[in-house]
View 1 (cartoon, rainbow, N blue to C red):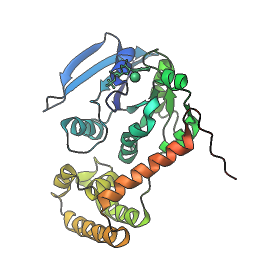
View 2 (cartoon, protein in one colour):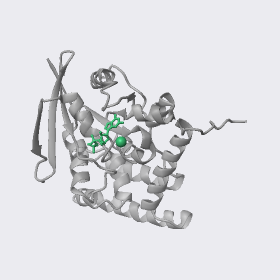
View 3 (cartoon, rainbow, N blue to C red):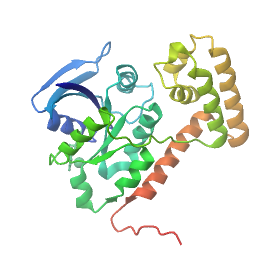
View 4 (cartoon, rainbow, N blue to C red):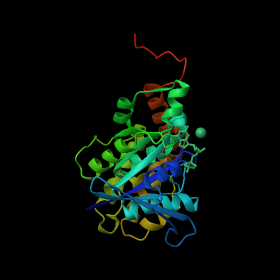
Length: 279
Ligand code: GDP
Ligand code: K
């Protein structure tokens, strides 16, 4: 049969373990991610002629380099490159969960969303415009309930079709405020021709450098292009100061949250809330 590897990524308590168990049943083993004591749960499922290996990544709210869980998660996503990343979202708490999603968008991995706890979403009367949210996030969204084991076949069907490139949604980018976006572009261009860095998405590296990500700094500093990159970073710092009285790192965080608030406003209606109409 054909082999597909998928990774489950999501916040703590999004129901990732429940989904992992529902998908893989008894076919599981526990190990460690290389070099660290973070547990690696791996399992598999045979489905429609495919062997789908499922890696349950540690629960994380973000992909910063400040905790072993987050470092393991992004190292796995960047270096091991699973065929499909399944971003598990806690349906009733979408807003908080979407921060990680914006970072998967930045990594430009092939991902789809398992919108979990749909039983609770429906019970609470929360209405989610899945079609619109798909366009904004640039990925397929499959409503599931790990608890009720519903939506799992649809999820597996989508995983197969995405991995085989049979279905595609145009990836969407989160654009930053114009002056910062110009800095991102400039640094991206400097990094995109570097053979040694071709493992990485250049735009992701640029964003991480502007966020003062110490791991990415250490990586990029080894190469001659660093001289130019460092100048561009200093210029970005000056621009952010002059135009926004702020720092790139802060602006990036604010823009991610603004994107998430916009998506929530457009796509999610809380119980009792009347949908905003344009007049
Ligand atoms: P993890 O931290 O992401 O691995 O989350 P768990 O799988 O441990 O789930 C966290 C809590 O959410 C547990 O109490 C689960 O029983 C519950 N849960 C998980 N999936 C669902 C679901 O689809 N519906 C509901 N109502 N609860 C769920
Ligand atoms: K719950």
